[in-house]
Image (cartoon, rainbow, N blue to C red; front, side):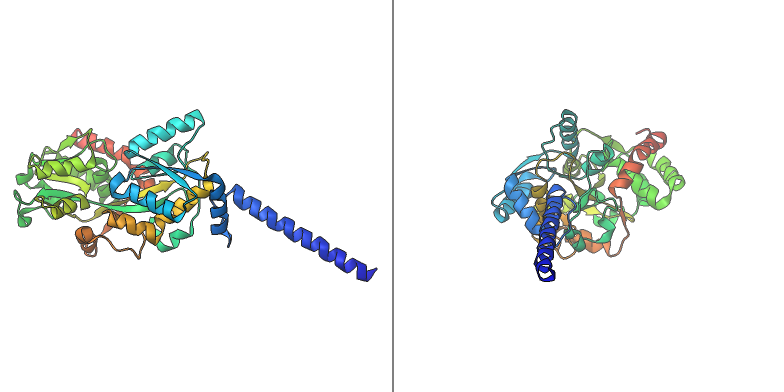
Length: 362
C-alpha cells in the first residue's frame, strides 16, 4: 500500500503544480498591465500575438517622432499592426473622453505633454508597471503608477539675436522688470504650459506671497497674452521680430531653429521649470498585452534613442541629448531644475490662472 501511495501522491502533486502554473499564467493574461513574473516578456508577446493590433494616440510630431517610433516598434514586433493618431494634448483628451462616455475606448496607449494629468483627473487611467522604469531617474516616477515619462521639457525665454545681443538679454526673472522690456514681452495665455506654468514655477520656488508681489510689478510691463495657437508659434513671432521676448517657451525650440539659420536663441532663468510627456493606459482597452510592449519599447534605450534623435529630451539616463539642444541640459548643471509633475499641474494650474487674473488681469 505504501509503495502504491507514493506514485499516487506524486501524481496529485504533479497535477496540483500544473493547475497552479496554469492559474498563474491565466492571472498574468488577465492582468498583463501589472504582471511582473519572470516570464513577463513571453506572456506579453504571446498575448499580443493573439491581439494582433494596437492603437496609439500621441502628441509627438508625426514625421519627426511618431512615425519612426511606430515603424521601429512594428519591425520589432511584426505580428502587431500599430495604428496611430496624432493631435495636440487637448484634442487627444477630448477624443478619449468621448470614447469613454460611449463605452468604446479605441486608444490602448495615450501619450503627450499635458494630456496625462487630464486623463488621470477624469478617472480614465489605470495603473500599470514596467521594468523599464529602472533606467529612468526616480524624480520622474509616478508613485501611483498611472503614468510613465516619455520625454522631458524645459522652459525658458526666446529672444531674437539680431534685435537683442546676448549681453542685453535678461538672465533672471527680476531682469524682466527692466523698463526696456515694457510692451515687448509675450506668453501663451490659458495654457498649462504657458503663462500658468510660469506662475506655478515661481509659486513652488518662491511661495505665493512673493510671487503675487512679483506679478503685480510684471503687470506694468504689459505682457501680451497670446492664445489659440501652438507653443511653437510664439517662437516664430520672436524670430519675425513681432515679439521682443517670448516667455515660458519650450527652451529647445529656438535652438532647433537656430541650427537652421534662424536669428533666435533661448535663455534659462533660475529656477528652470521642467515637465515630462506622459504615457497613460486608459481603462477599457482592447489590447493590453500589445499596449505594455509599446510602453516598454518607448521607454527602452532603443525607443528613447529615436526620441532623442527627433529633438526631444530623453528620460532614459543612458541616452544622450541631441547636440543642437544639448546646451539646455549643459546649462542645467549650473541652475536649479524645478520639476512640475502632472500632479503639480493638476494642483496648481487653476489657482495659478486665478492669481494671474487677480494680479495682472490676464
